[in-house]
Image (cartoon, rainbow, N blue to C red):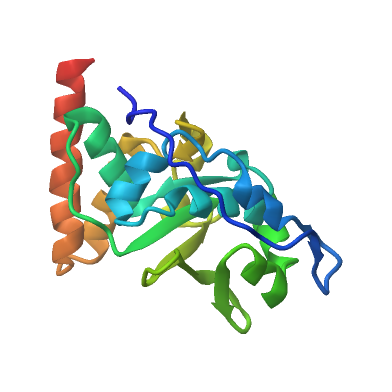
Length: 207
């Protein structure tokens, strides 16, 4: 089953094409495009009506939707919604697993390029971004390299849901299992692992 294909319409005036100091063109006009179908589900999970704008910004940030996948607790929440048709706990950050070419593109963006797409970062650190929807608190976006990263495992098996790639549930459970073993005192990881295992069982029942 897939998350409901509901659109979150947006109409946000943005500046014209901007070229960063590195020479990489950034087009803020992409934020006015039709957002991915999964935007409505993500808006509910992240508790922000601007999720469509966020996804369009990520597409431009990394080059295309194929260059990254939603991972971590948000991916788990998307699978939860898809399987049970209910919204799980609301994560306070968003993990995106990014391909090598997407990471290269990100490294070529400067502060101006990031800000034109609605993102901010600390100087010299582009693997932890912040994004603020209109009138909402900033959302932390953690950038996870798909290559040579334990948290990035499963990227090669990413699945397209409503116009956005999502790390498969099986890979999320594998990653959580490793995390619980390496961090036995991490109660949130234990809770997420238990939920992931329940979702795997539930998915078998509806397959």
